[in-house]
Image (cartoon, rainbow over the protein chains, first blue to last red):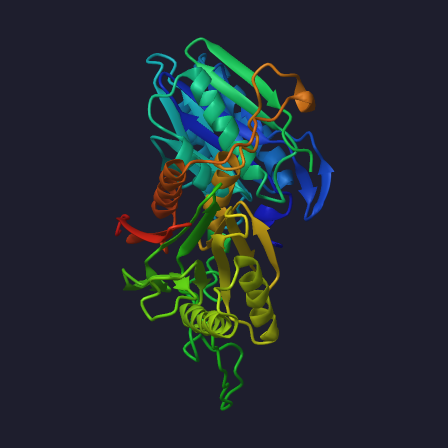
Amino acid sequence: MSSPFSINGGACVAMVGKDCVAIACDLRLGLQALTVSNNFPKIFQYGDNVFLGLTGLATDVATVSDLFRYKVNMYRLREERHIAPTTFANLVSSSLYERRFGPYFVSPVVAGLEAKTGKPFICGFDSIGCIDFAKDFIVSGTATEQLFGMCESLWEPDLGPDELFETISQALLNAVDRDALSGWGAHVYIIEKDKVTKRLLKGRQD
Amino acid sequence: MAAMFSQNPLMNGPNYSFNDAPKVNAPEGARQHRFDPYTDNGGSTLAIAGADFTIMAGDTRHTSGYSINSRYYPKVFKIGGTTADQHDANLVLSVVGFAADGEALKERLDAICKMYRYRHGKPMSVKACAQRLSTILYQKRFFPYYVYAILGGLDEEGKGAVYSYDPVGSYEREQCRAGGAAASLIMPFLDNQVNFKNQYVPGSGEGHALQERERKPLSRNEVEVLVKDAFDGAVERHIEVGDGLQMMVITKDGIEEILLPLKKD
């Protein structure tokens, strides 16, 4: 309970579909059992189709998300192009490993589409940057067990954008309803070749 | 992942039995004695009540720590028949947690149900057996049976009944319940697929004014598929679950036992 990863609570999930990816998070910020805010999104955008979900210690979520905004901005100025999801994933990995012996207490999730090919890309990390490449879905946060159960039973290959939205939403909503530290609404992003749809889900408010 | 901070073997790792646990802070020359009577034998159980049937299920893997002791060790039992083969039983008990305690609890409840039959000349109702099971568990309040029990049967009206318990006898009648190692993986799936949680009628309103999808009892076939899907998901992500899936289907015609294979890795 006093693990830095579960003080503030929160959940995040990413899924691959047919020519699209989805990433979703809950909105709760808490201090142990006390909910402090119900508007604390955990997904951040770093380009047209590069998204990062961060769960874990809220102070590190804020710090790390800002750190990557800085790093991605510097990359764009230097390279005069947007960062690719795979490049960004490696940036996340190496940045986290830099803090090998005093890590940020976050469990990041990257989701995006390769700009040229439009190929879906998702991956997850541990707090020191070990990358988990997945072909199906990535989960993180205090509701990981519940999310694994939901995703493992709801997800199937080649879901279209609308089906993917329904799948990821149901997976997240039902998972966080069985986790006391997550919930209070959700943000869902559906990322397609030249369209990103962001939806706000109300969910249970308790 | 939180995993790197939960590697303390005493807290989350393989579970130790008796005195082979690592010694902590033992002063020089002093010997620490302890008796650790519990082991977690893993596994998972699941029960769903239908309109006129109940399905109780459990995997058949028996583990301690990272070892698999057996690939067929049932944790779902018929209870209260007149004979050893339980051919005329009307109740099913599933136990998950510490297998030895589960076995002991099953034997005790079965004996009690049998005595009830002889004394009253009729089988025990689920409701009565449920209350009795709670009493048995609470009697060992300060040295509990380390098990999560689920009792299933048909109620007085012939409807499916599922009663779930904590290790010290707190209980509740429910439509469905998952227990054991993969309970947290299976339970949200059940909320969604059995009780239709977070499902709404399309276009019926906005925000919390939405109309919930009507709850209708599932057919036996649908439930069997659901149980298999739930366990296939759990097997994929939990190392203590696998090998075989044992299902007991309780109907007015008796109890049918089904054995299905699960992944053995």
